[in-house]
Each structure stands twice: as C-alpha cells, then as structure tokens.
Image 1 (cartoon, rainbow, N blue to C red):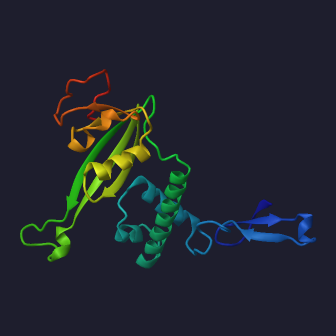
Image 2 (cartoon, rainbow, N blue to C red):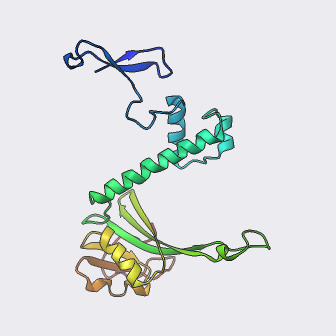
Image 3 (spheres, one colour):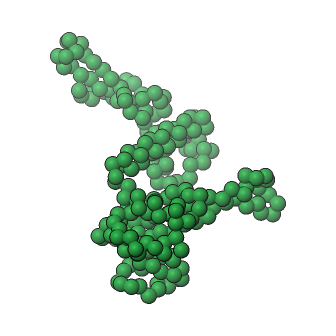
Length: 217
C-alpha cells in the first residue's frame, strides 16, 4: 500500500495493487481506522487543537473560533470529547500493563492529599446542598532528576484505609517515600515495600534519617 496524491481535502490517499484484490485497485482514505475517520475538519485544524490540548493551553471556544480551528462550538465540543476518550483508553491500557507505577532504585515518591470544595463568597456562587460537597485528592509524584510523573486519585477520606491501598498499587516496593507526617502513613515503615523518608511540613528540610533529595520539589 502506497501513498499517492489526490484531489480530496487531505490531498493524499492510500492505494494498493496487490494480487489478492483480484486485479482491482483498492483505495482508502488516510483517515481510515483513525481518530479522524468520520470528521470533516481538516487535519491541520485537528493538529492545532491537539497541540493546545496536549500543552495544557487555554481552550476557550471563543478564542479557537477566532483562530479558525473550527467553525462552530458544537464541532469543538465533539473534538474535545473524542480526545478525552482516547486519553482515557490509553491510561486504562497503561494501567493494565502495569506501567503506571512510580518509584524504584533511582526515583523517590512524594505523597500528599488536598481537600477541594466549593465555598460561596460575598453571597455569590452556587446555592444549595451541592456547594457543600468535599473531595479529597490524593497525589503521588515520582521524581527522578528533572522528570516528574504524577498520579492523582479521588478518595472519600484521607484515612489509612483509603490511602495505603493506592500507595501499594502505584508505588514499587523499596521506594523512598516523602510524606508530611500525616497519621495515615505512621505504619508505613513497618511494610517491607516502603522505605519512608518522613519530614515535617516546614519551609526548610527537616533532619532526615539518611541522605535524600530535598522534599520541596
């Protein structure tokens, strides 16, 4: 199968002349069996949107409409939905293969948890029972040189019962772990798969039990 020029929107198409086609020439679009298969948007516009999406840039629809990425907000919503599905499936495949793991001999892991909830201010904002919802986000950050690999998970509480299973699942055995001395981690040093480096939440490094990188990364 070879690429050849064509007068379609993409300017190219696949062409195959193998004998198994019984002497007939088979042609396929370059979008066949891809993310862009049923899209009428140009590949250049797709690339512009994917670049902004991957770099974490502002994705305000009014800005992208002015830049000519798409012709309507409905098209932008469809593109965003497709990319999110692709990202979700890629993360699930990576997790099934066991590659979504942090730590190791040359990498240490920082653990922290944060509470997110909506609060009305100056009498404005959401009103009703929904604004009282609170979510704990448990973060694990693998640090190796200049490389940073984060894993974030939603948890109901920051208790040992909710946090330790996630650490066991995503952090390799024997990894040096940096925490903020939260009581859920107090028994981590009893586990063979963890070698914790505990420090107090202070602006400067605390007294470590052994030489280790600075926790404020």
